[in-house]
Length: 82
Image 1 (cartoon, rainbow, N blue to C red):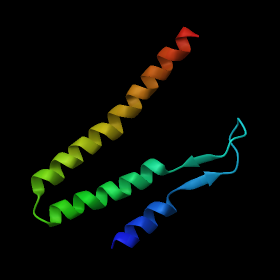
Image 2 (tube, helix red, strand yellow; image 1 turned 30 degrees about the vertical axis):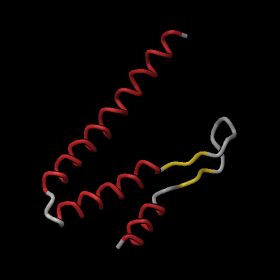
Image 3 (tube, rainbow, N blue to C red; image 1 turned 135 degrees about the vertical axis):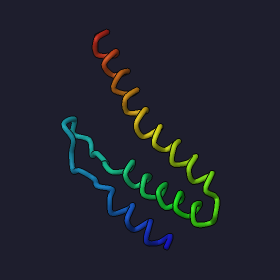
């Protein structure tokens, strides 16, 4: 089961040959981490640790939705200062 989760996560990671700046760019790391997180929450729920599973799901939801909003807000503030 662990190898299957790793295989799915690795399949979601893509390396683009070049970005606009000329450097290689890797995409899909958050998706791969989300696949591992989903598997871990499922294992916790399956082992009878429902409180841990629910708390982990709520924390993950908060992080995956609040952090991008915070980053975009900080980037917008940074571009207005330039």
